[in-house]
Amino acid sequence: MQEKDLTLERRAFLYKSALLFVGSLLGLKGLSRSLASACTINPKIAIIIDDIGFSEDRLNEFLDVEACLTFSILPRLTKSAHLAEKIHARGYEVMLHQPMEPLDPFVDPGPGALYVRDPLEKIANTIKENISETPYVTGINNHMGSRFTACGTEMKEVLTVARDSGLFFVDSLTTNRSIGYRSARAMNIPAARRDIFIDNVQDEGHTGMQLENLKGLARVFGHATGIGHPFPETARAIQGFCNSLRETDISMVPVSTLLT
Image 1 (cartoon, rainbow, N blue to C red):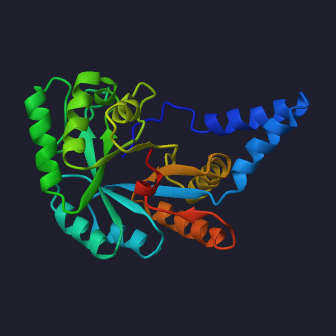
Image 2 (image 1 turned 90 degrees about the horizontal axis):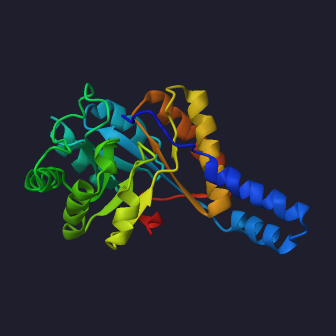
């Protein structure tokens, strides 16, 4: 489950829209045309469903949508390995949803978590064990982690394991102080970052609006990455959203296709 989103999820979209507007006001038609043209080149959307591992029934609701989703598995839960196997067998991408320390000391990130106070060797061994116990993992994203992802030495240890294991990294951006994506790119690790939490409010209508915002970002930048959670409302909203995409040039893709 995500922590409070401390970033302005649509700031990039608003920034690009402002450039279009200013370009028009100043007569910089070339700028406006070049930015507008970026909105028309087969946009791609990736949606990661976090917090998989508790319920097979909840997973099935998303598998039944038959959309190109990526699933991120919490480690060391009773059903973690089984659900990873099932997701892979259905042809979907599997990630490790690595628990990391949040700012709030009273919030438990769950089993297999990483803490800033841990020795580096323990951090490395913990994430290696989580990877080995979760079949078919191709990448990692953080679960919580508003404290951990802001700490350079500890994140470098995590990313070193990811690199040595041939995995990519997606920064969930649970804090605007996260250095995860930037550090991954500095280490030449394929990486991406979350643009929008689509269900920060557990309501089908709100999730639908967030998906439309995600589509707007993809129209502007060519691609966008959303993160959701295994709520029935989210599954229904994604189903409706995918139905609406059928007559468009927008594609749903695994997050691994949007790495930089």
